[in-house]
Length: 232
Ligand SMILES: *Cc1c(COP(=O)(O)O)cnc(C)c1O
Image 1 (cartoon, rainbow, N blue to C red):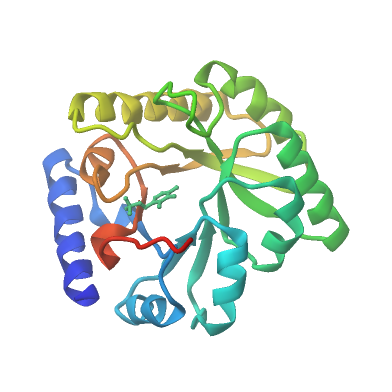
Image 2 (spheres, helix red, strand yellow; image 1 turned 90 degrees about the vertical axis):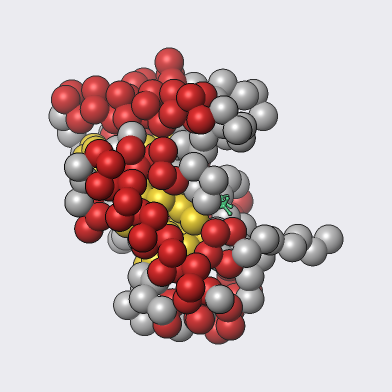
């Protein structure tokens, strides 16, 4: 079933790309594996999935020893609490998608310095305007990026957003378009130590719109693995 789902998703990616004249090879797919067992994750990885993403450090810490990680990329996509930074670094994420505060970036930089490491990150932007959502307010994005760009070992590589949870595709598109506009404006500024390379947007329900609006990093969970069941 996972294999069929993955094949179907690749077709949908191709079709979305065709609609807007993009190359499917420019879209990177991250399988979001939260709540799923290492065995299920390994199954997906065996079908050619190269990147997987998780949003809870404790959960991935427990599963990681059983995941066949060889040649695969681990992405951290969840809210990062300062007291979990050291644990996360030890899991060697290729990219942290969800930096939204200077204080977190600063603490991350300190931990990296101590270990002689660097870390690629994305800045999470709140494009939906919903107070409950994570991410920096678009109006504060420029200042935040300028401050984080001064941190020697943290490298900003793009932006991430979670689209509004709604059936209104115009509203979802507005969120993604806003992030793309911010991305392009930042790219034009060419800030030192900042490279606008990744535009992380699009989940199972809205990845086709995200691709049409320029996403090059999509994060798909339920469309690959089926519905999630959360344990208490
Ligand atoms: C869970 C999650 C996803 C995947 O959601 P689906 O709707 O299952 O595809 C993507 N991004 C983030 C940040 C998530 O937490």
